[in-house]
Length: 236
Image 1 (cartoon, rainbow, N blue to C red):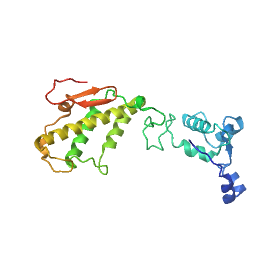
Image 2 (cartoon, rainbow, N blue to C red):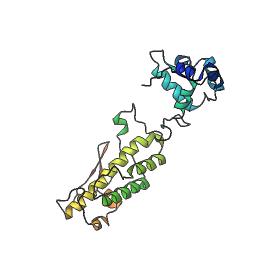
Image 3 (cartoon, one colour):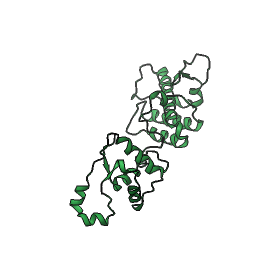
Image 4 (cartoon, one colour):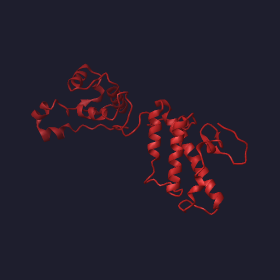
């Protein structure tokens, strides 16, 4: 829950009342409960805030929601700062750090953890990265050098916003299955192999995404599993 404090008295003491007026009252206190009043709307518009924009509406809604008990204050500069954390469609992006649609707050796992269709391009991107990193790091999931976040981000930006959370979950399931298949191949040659131990990289040379995915099956609505090699082929 957002907590909006009134620090206008600090700015007044730092800059003086006249300076505050010259700066357009950016730090003057505004009751959150008064955001819908015509007087405050005029004040916001004169400060360059487009009150009809989705950015402003998202910020105003979040402030009003946090002000259920009343008594909270804000100011024009605080509103501008918070608006910079949203895109033009009113999606929270943390200033561009978060892909729109990837904020999971308030969305139950049952709605996020679902298997959906993923494009061949995105699956190939994940397969290539997983295979390369598995070989380079000898099967160790190295959080310091991995580029998997880049793969996820490329996918998210290519997908419809309403599918991004579910799709990211699904792509992560594919990643697990690719890794499991690589481990299986290496262990067939060396049953005592453990992540971090060197292995013959040629073992994975001919492993393709298609060969792995021919063994991947959907398990329930939220999981993928890898069939044993000697089982009948069943595709998703």
